[in-house]
Each structure stands twice: as C-alpha cells, then as structure tokens.
Image (tube, rainbow, N blue to C red; front, side, top):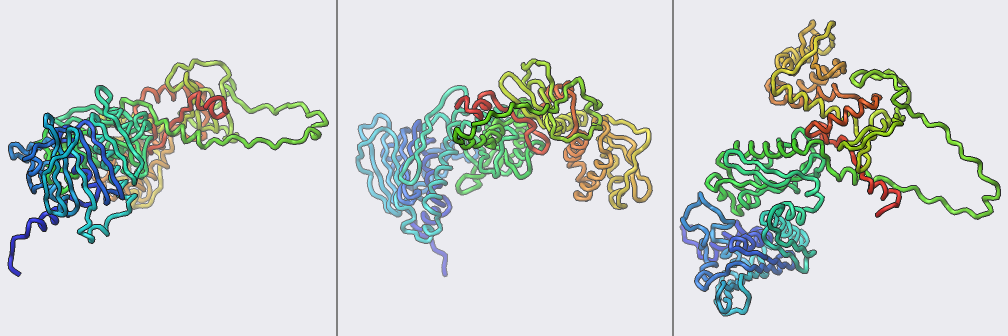
Length: 601
C-alpha cells in the first residue's frame, strides 16, 4: 500500500487518542485552559460520568472572534509567544486539545471578552465546524462537550462505569484546586455529590485550600514546608509520620503549578520518611515545587502528567532537606488521629438490667474493696533504668506517685507506670500514655545518628570479651564487616572458626543484650550478602542497635526516670514515633475523657 497523507478528521481522531483518554482528561484540558485565561471562578458540571455531558464555565478573559475560530484548529495556541518550549509558564501549550475533543464529541464553545457587547458561539460536531453565531452570556467562556466517543464505539466500551469516571473527574478537579487556591471551584452534576471550594487568599491560603480539599484532619496533622536550595523552592504540607495511609493516593505533587507524577519526587519523599514510617505505609504529602521553567521539560508526556528535571539530584536533595527540617522542627509532635482511634476502641459498659424492687428486700453488704497493689517511689527497689529489673511480680501492675506534681511540660509529668511498659503522664490539657520502649528506642537512635555524623560512635570496652558462637559463614560475614561496625562502636574479632569475640560495644547501649544484637546483625548481613550493602544501610544497623539498647518492655522505672524520659522526648526531634513508624505516645484531651463518661459531647 503506497504512503498517503491522512485526512484532517482522521488526524484529529488519532490525536484524540493521545490527548483524550477518558472524560477526566477532557475536564483537565478544559479547566487548564480556563486557568490560563485568568479565571477566578470555574464551574464544572457533568452527567453520566462525563460521557453524556461536560460543561465548563469560567469568568476568564474570553476570546475575540478570530481567536475563537482559531481555537478549534490543530496546533493553534496563544501560549507560546516566542515559540520557546524551554520557557513554558502556562498549563497548556500544544494547541491541540479542542480540535481533538471536537473530533470525538459534540463540542460547543461560547465566549465573550471584556468590553464586548455580546458573546459568540462556535460548534464542532465530530470534526465538522459551524459558526460562530451570536450568544447572550456574561464575560468569560462556556465549553460544552456532549456524547463523548459516540462515533468511536471501540473507545466508549473501554470506559469504566459512570461512578468510576465521575470519581476520576473529581480527582482531577481536586488536584487543580489544590494547585490554584486563588480560584473558586464548583463541581456538580447528576452523577455526583456537589463540591464547592471558595477561593482563599493571603497568608495561609495554601493550608486553607488543602483543608478544603483533603480535609481539616490533614492540615491539623501536618507540618509546613518552606525551603530553597540551588534554585529549587519547596513548599506545601507534609503529614506527620504517624499520619499515614495504606497507599500513595494521598500524595500530591505539583511543579510550577502543574499536577504531576514523577519518580524523582516519589523517591525523595520515601527517602525523607525512611526513618519514621512503616514500609507498607505511605505518608500524606502535598508538595509544591517552584523551579526555573528552563530546568524542567514538561513536553515528555501526551497528557503533560509527567516531566523530566534537568538536575534530578538537586530536586531530590531539596525535597529531602525540606521535609527533614520540617519534621525535625515538629519535635515530639504526633498525629491526633491516634487518640481518635483509641477513643473509638472504648466501649461504655452495657447498662445493668433493672430488677424489681422486691429483689432488694434485704440490705446490701457494705462495700470493702481489697487494697490495690500500688508501689510509690518510696518502696521502689530495682536499680536505675539503664539496668535490669530483678523483680518477678506480675506485669499487670500500676506504679503510682502519691505527691502532686507540676503539669506545665508539653508531655506532662509522670503519674504512674502501667503493665511495666506504659507511662501514664498528665499535662495541662489531658492525659498521655507513653510506650517506654518505643520512645527510648527513638531517643537512642537519634543519639546514634548524631554521634555518627560527628565521627565514630563512642564505645565502651569490656573487661572480659563476650564470646558469641555462630555458624562459620556468619562469623566470616561479621569479620568482613568489622571495620564498618567499629565506626558504630561495635568492636569484634574472630574467635576460632565458629565464634566471634565482642570486645567493645557502643556506650549508648549500656548493658544490653550483646549476644542478641550480634546474632541479629549476622542475620541482616546474610540477607544483604555484601559489605558494600552494609555501608548503604547503616541506618538499618543503627536502628537494630537502638532496639537492643533501649529500655525494655516489662522493666519498672522510678518516677524520676519516667520524667527524665519525657523531658528527653521533648528535646529530641521525631520522638513522636518509634523507628518502626509506630506512635510513641497517645494524648487524650480532657474533653475527650469527659466525652467517654458522657459529661460532654
């Protein structure tokens, strides 16, 4: 078959296959045009998931007659004044969206610029243009798309249900609204619940818009980002490490006002949260990058949903630094949703059945409870919290302090220890439950990292080396890794074919379980299978050491030791969650406790 030039309508339909994937992509292109036109209010109406109707109304600058006619032609645009693809400052720039939409649907555009006596309307029905004709309307532009893919049944049958397509449109509008807090967005239709996000201006506008779209929950459990590095400006909100989701759908990325999906940004966020979040959990973030347009290529994807940074390393470093600084500034703060989960778990006791009065003919016996087992600081016998408890009483015990204490610290003052693992503290606003092992684990981990940054970790020599028997291959791996482990304060050497001798341990660990630590390290080295992998995973080794060096569950603490732990948490960044991503404490406000007892609502 000889080569031939394709007809214009077929060219448009082929182009529509790249630009118009589904109704949501139509909405994205049309709303982006409205934003580029300076609209301050955009109303979106849909029916049948966008397959039956998409209507976009804006109050932007509008179009004159000549511009309106050209707007439905392929590759006609007003957004590339200098024909420079390295300086794109608008959301759209290719000039093919309207022509592509008109080739697979019934498209009509009505527009009236400022100062015009009336508007004009042009229509394109499956590639056939008519108009323009006069149209009575207010300033701005109204675009209607009906019967999408009606003449391309093969495309139509691959669309999802009306509900799923309507959900995809909602997601597109959410992202556009998040990127443009100064624009009022209205979303309604017969196939959805209405949404109305008024424009917000001034200081705090971004946080207010994110609260509108994502929810107040996110705004209250996130930290503000603000960092500039090597020409990359990072702004937005990053959720606290204890505020996570089961998937990455709540991670939003914007570059120069454009919503994007980018592996560099996803990887940077994952690295920034690596120390604080479970591997199967995802932090909630809304990340805004501002960068010189010449440093980013947005013309690498048909739908402009992906891009390419010229200097990926600089962008990655800026994002990691911004999130790291913000989380460090948050200190010990933890997500308030943890307390809400606790409150939901509480169930009030069922009311006792009402008995007839005759049942109470004899007097009830006097109430004389058995004395509770409470141990105050005066009768506490174990050594300091860095040593091991020798007591063998049941763990379900409460250790309380009788004397009143001040409550002006953020994490309060210790009132009791429960089940030999949880510290009960009180501050001016309510009650706190602290997991002593998880909290101390984070403190030791942060101290390890601080020492490692300034040089080798301080070690403590053993008068008698601890000999640990291991399989020969594990001993060989530990011997090969000895120089790296020595930087972490762990000095060991081969002691025969099937043992290693531990002569030094990190001073931060105290009298920990040295044998258990070495066995765990041997298991991890076997999994990584190389010393070079160990160098790349020093944080994992530090985490393992911190776990073994922290105060254990089931260990009794004196009241002064509990308070010392609380003060250290207040002074240590990221102490609101352990190194595995779990919360280290839960705070119940006074009003929440009153609500449990029906005293308030």
